[in-house]
Structures are given as structure tokens and as C-alpha cells.
Image (tube, rainbow, N blue to C red; front, side):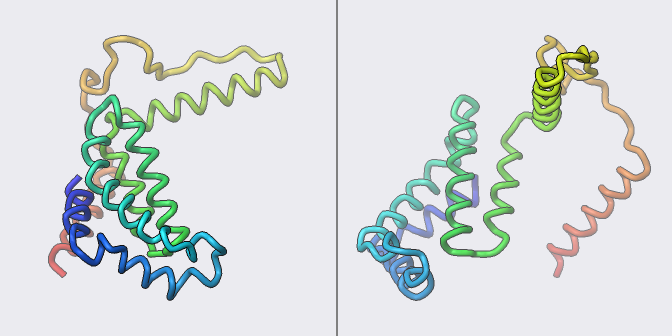
Length: 175
């Protein structure tokens, strides 16, 4: 949320509101190879204002649970278009991955469960022979939320991964 809010505040200047950075970028980098849209006069100004509005709104939208899916898809579209149009390196991938911080703690298990059950249904519909085996994780079962599951101790390889990440982050902060 801080990154997006700061990006919105930084864009509140005269040059950005006139679309000047994007006009220069588009004329210099992508207008020659990407067709008619970047050559359209209103395109850089539209991109400037839509980026400004996106940066100010997406932090609130993605933080509020009922609108989180909308914020997620807005973020995916915004950063994919930035990667395709401006080719600004790894930053769009990093920001798309960081949206997972806003999801519930068991979102990865829920997603894996959904993919697994839908794949099984698809395979079963194709072959119509094998019954679906019972699953170990069912997010629909009530009172089995992540905060009610007892905490287990980390295994040795998990401790090594945590230690590596901590050392890496400390190295990034110090140097």
C-alpha cells in the first residue's frame, strides 16, 4: 500500500499531469515499433492519468476484502501492461507477486485444492471410470481456518530456508 500511495504522491506534479514523461518515453522508445496507438496524441495523457488514479486507489481497493479481487485484477493488468509497453525489468513481476500478501493465509492451499479438484473432475469426465478419492484438505469444512490449526515446529530444511532469507534481507539492508 505504501508503494502505491507514494507512487501516486510522486505523480502529482506538473510534468506528470501534462503527460510529459510518457510523451518523451513513447516517442523515444515504442512509437516506432508498436503501431498507431502510441502515436495517438491522447494516449500518453490517458496513460498518465490512469496510472495516477490507479496508484491512489489500488491500495484501498486491495486492502478491503470485498473489493480485493478487483484490486488483484487491476494490479495484474496494470503491471502486465507496464511490462509489455515499457519493459521496465523485474519490478512488475515483483509487484504482482507482492499482491499475495493481501490474501488470506491459506490462499495457496485453497488454490491448490481448487486446481486439484477441478483437474480430477475434468479427468473423471473424460474417462468416467475412476471415483474421486477423498481429499485431505477441504476449505469448505467449518471451524478449520488457518488460525485454529495447531502450530508445528519447523523442520531442518525449513529453518535453513528461513535463515537464508533473513541473511539475504539483512545483506540487502546493510549493503
